[in-house]
Amino acid sequence: MTVLVTGATGHSGRHVVAGLKAAGVATRVLVRDPAKAPEGVDVVQGDITDPASAAKGGDAVYLLWPFFTGEGIKAAVEPFKGKRIVYLSAMSAEAGGVWGDVEAAVEEVTDDWTFLRVTGLATNALGWAEQARTGVVRGPYGQAKRSLVHERDVADMAVKALTEDGHAKQRYLVTGPESLAQADQARLVGEALGKPVRWEEQPRDEAKRQLASSMGEEFAESALNHWASLVEEPEPVSADVARVTGHVARPFAEWAREHFS
Image 1 (cartoon, rainbow, N blue to C red):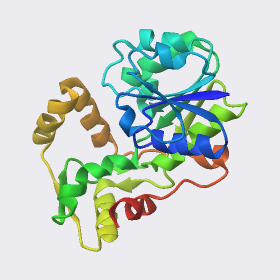
Image 2: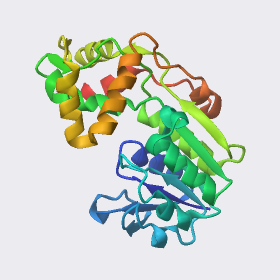
Image 3: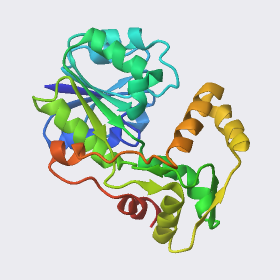
């Protein structure tokens, strides 16, 4: 079989490529800049909004949709009609939004789909890197408890779903092994850095202005509402990573050591 990986230079995609290559699976990547493409794969220059050339001859697709709206998704997935599609989704897809829109579009073109619904990627904490090195991370809802997942666990799930049977029409909840407050995540980043790092609470209005500048106001408001809810109701912890991959999910402390030590 041949598997097409979109987002192949990103946090999870590069590990998907590595996992497929290790399994001896022919791998094709769709990238905007071929110079950044992984080695040892078939490279197609292009964009996920127009993947027709990359889709030809492929059997399965790892789908990453990097936008904050679902505009254009139906046309984007049409070239994948009838193929196996593993989509990096989000837990909130159940409520709709961009992730729900993408899932619906995928279901229209194939019955062989798998949705990896992550609570959140640990790599989001890389956004704190500059602040963490000063000893203070400033953000909203420091007591929001999140079960962030290591990108390598996401990739392990994806490789299984792309190369094995038995995963069609499965909506997996992909989480880390524990639910940690954001303030505790910052502390663990500090331990990886070898210095104390504390959390400083940021007013919601200020945080919304910052987020809206890159995400748009509607998405920013939705994200803040979600984080606020996690103060009292932590994100769930799922056993799906262990059930599908055969190994327990990697803890946030391990992720922090890998990225900040």
